[in-house]
Image (cartoon, rainbow over all chains, first blue to last red; front, top):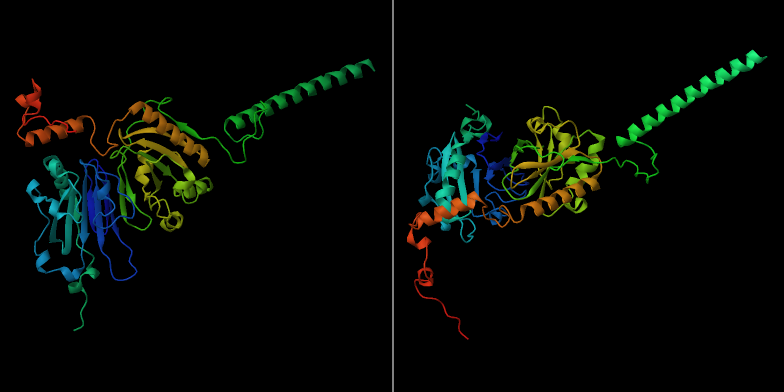
Length: 163
Length: 260
């Protein structure tokens, strides 16, 4: 079981998972941390939400992305939920939730705020029919994540103000 | 006069013995150096190796059947991101190259491992470069050598886990079993690639379609997956549909008849 951590996100990866936590370099604008986790080799150069990777999944595979949004998202209705979901059931996954529809696969996406940071958690199952066996892997991964408060400077509300 | 001749003869004999001993000692040293791969010339008149062509020493399962389980590699990237590589989550081979930014013998491997065309490894071979962690390496130096073509993980723990004696060092892992299938030192790119190809050939011959090469689970995982699908359909062990007696049991809705 490997543990990785960067940018205020730590993952104690369940057996069989690999992952990466990174901030994509951008020539314009500001980018925020992304965590990608999968039960298959994650290629370099894939999209934040797994484009380029989900097509490589086998039916027994799982892919998940933890994506942080900018502080301007804090307090919005989309991120009103406090804390990540406590666990998913098979009913939480739907083929209609996929960013890119691939026959046989299904996904789920949740938006929430945790430790003062707005996130979305997006997971894809390699086989919707095998969700009873695959969803527990997603839940184990989700519970293995530790999300720390962002650095003080990252929060506009915490920045020093002129009196 | 006779005594002088006798003394001179004795001195010449002693000196001859000393010279013969020195020549023998020198030959032993040359032979040892040659066996270590750093000799000059070949006493057995075999073709001389090319300059810098030191032999690859890789342990294979045939010579060491218990290389052991290969642990995951987890650390940071040269840019400060986090990265974990699982070596047991696919049917592919994973070639772990333990390199340093400062070792002269590593330079050729930094280039070759990040250039798939040059190394010409088997198609389904994943290459991962592992350096020591930022506590023992200079990230900026590693960043200069990393091209982004293959994952580069900085992890001192991985060097300890894999008991790396020094760089360059290589470990080949079979993803289907999660076990090491070869490891050792190398100083020539071509020989390393050949050894990987040979390991892939041996593995393919031994496995014969095992694992998840078609994207499906193999063995017990496949059986468990089939059981789950059947259970979801309400079919449990002992169900009559699992034991057909006639073709009508197999095709309860009638058999399709080919049309002309």
